[in-house]
Each structure stands twice: as C-alpha cells, then as structure tokens.
Amino acid sequence: MNPGCSLLAVVLLVLIALAGVGLGGMDIIFGIVIPYAAFAIFLIGFIYRIVKWAGSPVPFSIPTTCGQQKSLPWVRANNLESPHNTIGLIGRMALEVLLFRSLFRNTKVGLKGMRPIYGGAKWLWLAGLVFHWSFLFIVFRHLRFFFEPIPEPVNILTALDGFFEIGVPELYLTDVAILLAVSYLFLRRVVIPQMRYISLPSDYFPLLLILTVTLSGVLTRYFFKVDLLRVRELSLGWVGFQPTVPKGIGLPFYVHLFLVSVLFAYLPMSKLMHMGGVFLSPTRNLANNSRRRRHINPWNYPVKVHTYKEYEDEFREKMKAAGLPVEKE
Image (tube, rainbow, N blue to C red; front, top):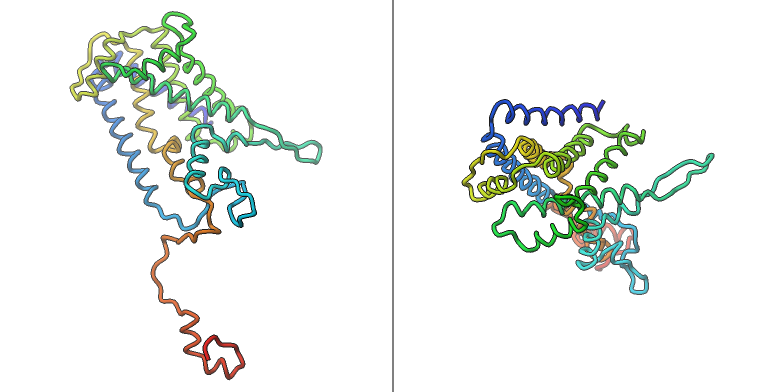
C-alpha cells in the first residue's frame, strides 16, 4: 500500500506538469513562479532546520564509538574510532560523510538451525555510496546552465563523466549509476519483508521522486530533445533575476523542471535533510573525551549547593559527639 500511494503521488505530479504546460499553456507558472517558490522554500526551510538543530541543547556526551577511548598513557587509544581531539574528529566525520564508513560495517543476521550467524551486507553501502556521489556529480554538472562563462572545473567534471563517449550525445556514467543505485534502494524496501514492514510512504516517496527526476532528465537528454540554448537562457535569467520564458523549449523539460522543483521544496521537510543533519548529530560531532573533560549539561540552571565544608561547619560539634571524623578540628 505504501509504495502504491507514493507511486500514485509521483504520477500525479507528472500529470500536473503535462496538463499545466501542455494543455493549460502555463509556461510562466512552471518556468518561473514554481522554480522561484521551490528554491525559496528550500532555502528558508533548510536554514530553519539547521538553525533549530544547532540551537538544541546537548545534555549528555553521547558519541557513538567502537574503539578504545584515550585514558592512561600506556593504554593505546584509537583516535579515529574514538576521537579525543579535533584532528581525530575531523577524520572520523570525513570518513562518515564521504565514504559512509559506519554503513560499510553493516552486517546481516540469519539463523542456521538454532544458531544465529552474521554476514556482510555491503550492497547497501555500495548503492548508497554510488547514489550520493552520482547525485552530487549531477548537481555539479548542471552548474554549466547557470554560469557564463562555464567554470573550468565544471567542464572537466562533465568531460570525465562522459569519458567513454557512448552514443551521441555521449552517455554520462552518473546517469546510469544513479538509476541503478536508486532502483536497488527502492526494490530493497519492496522485496525484503523486514524492510517492507518498517517502511513508510516517507521512505518510498523520495526514492520514487528522485528516480522519476532522473528518468525525466535522461529522457529529455537522449530521447525527447529540447533546445539547450533556450534552457540556458532561462536558467541565466533566473540567476540574474530577469527571467523570461523562451519559446520552444519543449514540454519534457517542464516536466523535469517541475519534478526538480518539487524535490527542492520537499527536501527540508523530509528525511533527505540528513544531508545537513549529519554534521549536527551529537553521536558523530562530539569527541569521546568524557574521561578527560567534564561535559556540562546546558539545561542545568544555577542552584544553591551545600558544600561539604559548609556541612561540616554546621554540624561539626554533633559529628564529633557522634565519633564521626572531621577535616577541621
């Protein structure tokens, strides 16, 4: 039921774009108003979520580690698994963000008779890594539509992406990679009973939306040709805040643009916000130095404490009479 509802929602989005531009002639709405609105929602929502998370108190030091914490000089510590300083913390975060190190250690559990067995589960790590890096490369590659002249790093990345020059226009490797990766991530939730049981529409919808965005982009590039010069004219108009909708861009482009706009607007209110939240997670961004440094709870408020010195001054005579030791006679 959950994947069906998500699929229906994505199909409705495609039909809205087809009807709005193809039948309604609302080129300005889908070419200017919706992209601007989607980007505004994305920017405001992203900043709001980050600021809200950044302002949340961290009452406990809770870094998730699986290595020896630094303690006594003769005990060998693992500064990458259990970082105690900034260098180790940066290294751990870099491996987590760039290579999904914790996901690489993912294991699956099965039963052999009555005995549990554990095995590797690297396909999820590989699909996640391929998907995220391909998505990043595709976004970076699209920057050529927003700059004049095109930055040289974008040209270099575009050339590397189409290195094999398969077909005309050349086939980009990231297009194939992201389609395979997203398909695997979606089918994994549908086919595996345990994953299907815990999956919600909020898990299926982003995958289907990203898959549809990619498919529409591929179809626009390789099958339903659009005028890229007019597309670049439109995108440069967005950047210069002087947007105009050129004639003859083509309906497939507006479908692709509308789906991208929906993805941008949906991102701040979805699980896709982990792209920013990973940097603010106390299980990742705190050093594991609780034996060397006291972590103060920011929720603590000033209280009047009764120190032992004050306690002894108040009850010294009674303590002596009861035979209790005192520090000051």
